[in-house]
Length: 171
Image (tube, rainbow, N blue to C red; front, side):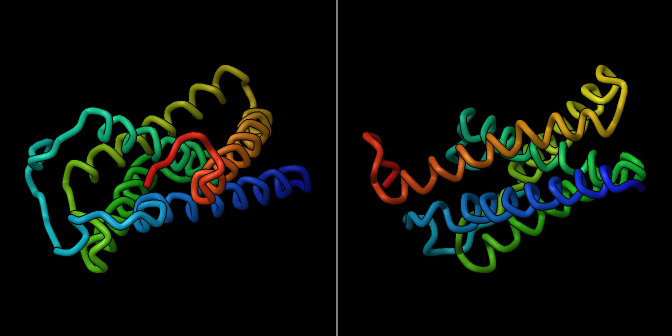
């Protein structure tokens, strides 16, 4: 692996780390908001039937895991799809398990399915981009550029929300 590839991988790993921190803050810490359902441990093992099913929540669960799939396809490029699929599932399982253990939320099979689906979509999106561009490194640099801007904007939005500096409030 050349110097340029190593540099691109370091940037991707840095973006992945920031993404995972933000993901944990959103999923585990609920952006610092305490919800009433966090007082007790709940498990839902019936997909899409948790009593408060929301299509918007389902879509957001898919969308929030798309970057994980993109980063995995970039960094685990020499691994089989099955390895990546297991990675998406286990990452989601870990987050769902932590929610249950620490009473941060409900362990929900629907979330496992939608989060894993988001990872798969991200994986396939990068695969398609790589095929379109015709070069893994060029596609990676393109994604890193977009991800760096997107990461900055998302972190900025979350900080502004947390500091109540926006005309909207999530609390």
